[in-house]
Amino acid sequence: MRVLVTGFAGFIGYHLCRRLLAEGHAVTGLDAFSTYYDVNLKHARHRDLAQSAEFEAVEGRIETPGLLHDLIGRTGPEVVVHLAAQAGVRYSLENPQAYADANLIGSFNLLEAVRAHPVRHLLLASTSSAYGGNTILPFREADRAVSPLTFYAATKLAMEAMAHSYAHLFSIPTTAFRFFTVYGPWGRPDMALFLFTRKILDGEPIEVFAGGAAERDFTYVEDLVEAVRRLVDRPPPLPGAHVERMPGDTLSDCAPYRLVNIGAGQPLRLDAMINILEVALGRRAQRILKPLPPGDVPRTHASTDLLHRLVGSMDSTPPEKGIAAFVAWYRAFYQV
Image (spheres, helix red, strand yellow):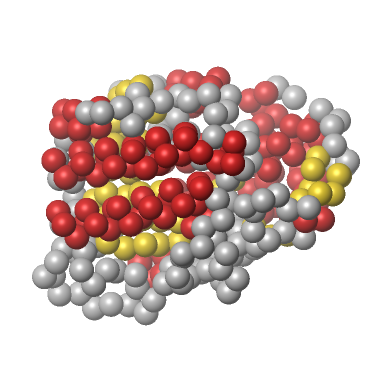
């Protein structure tokens, strides 16, 4: 296949590109190398991917007028995986404009580009934060998502709605997936596991929100990439196609559009995650207990029933194994 991955130098984009290249596909990656977190880490991911002759890297911002239109027209991808976004729940309280630019305008530019240059399958990354104030667990794709708690979540919900409208109007087979707290080697420095690891090794205290009682559906990155890769080959059917709906299917009644959770389906308390991390590091953490910040939810839990019905059964990496793999990568990368 010819595949375009936006956000290729990001955590998930890097792992997905590696997987696609290992399978022999031709991959074009677009990334802005934004300074939201350490650009050196993004450049290191880029250097690793650039070893493949089947990889082309393009630097640019998705909100730049005409960039995506020209790029897709030139490279002719059969599949587009849209991972580029301004990420981070808490940062959206500080700089909401960055989210409007990347997540709204940038995603609009992508939809217009795909409208002009149709693809076999468009896949879009959304977030578990879209479930917002929902309190019924586990989160199911059919649950109403109308109460976002942050502007970040609101922009991702808006992207889902925009994508549905384009799928309906222009028959673009589209899958949107909601990710749940992804972790693993090459992870994001702004996320808890990375932050805790750095501070514990540096002898600094860590801030533990909600007394450690907050729960997250931690999803190992290779498991997530496996799910995305399988979904690439399952585009929603075009209008008029006969299809038997499976239980819990989110296939739209009026568009080739589907929404799918990608998570482990096994929530873990924050304090339990820290305990596992301490074992992997061989060090104890100094913990400062703090209340949950604005916009954070006390727990997330993905229903993965639809995912497994679509792509088959999948193994879930145990947290002990996944956290140990992250620690091994961190020590090797930063030589600590």
